[in-house]
Length: 210
Image 1 (cartoon, rainbow, N blue to C red):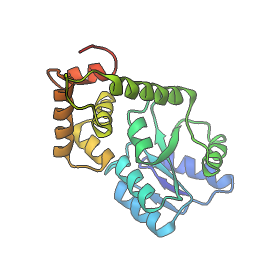
Image 2 (image 1 turned 60 degrees about the horizontal axis):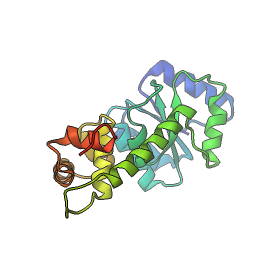
Image 3 (image 1 turned 120 degrees about the horizontal axis):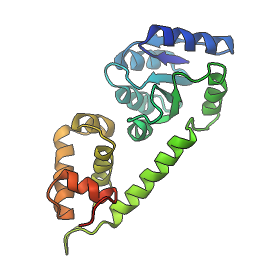
Image 4 (image 1 turned 180 degrees about the vertical axis):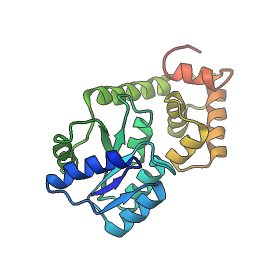
């Protein structure tokens, strides 16, 4: 088990709870770079990654998932509605757990993840279902007459913008350049025949009609 958490009391509490239940904490990382380095060295079955990890939790999740696909990654969050839910799942995370979760429940949750389950509350599961509905609305959104339909990548970029992510965060989540993100936005705006990205997001989320 690799634990990437910057807050010392939280890190100590989680580590104690896990080790008391038979888990072995093979490394403690304080940044995304250190988390990736430790994961590559230790090859842990499970990684707990702080959503606010310096250097970018999404960077760490993406690198670990790509380079150690057998290692399951779970995000640690302080929020009931984590802003990085969709980007983290895209990057390879197997779920989210609250930092204030009863420590006695954490080992069972992580064992479930290790066995192939997702660590998602009912609330977060519903959010993911809403995201799927949003994507289907985006696919069916009317584009300019005779023009091409929206691509999957254009939809992904608009979805992440609807989640509140900045251009740099979207680029990191999708492993593309920031200029490419802007290009996808411009293309989506043109295809939908709307004035700007805000209007495109409104169409995607069903808050407006073109």
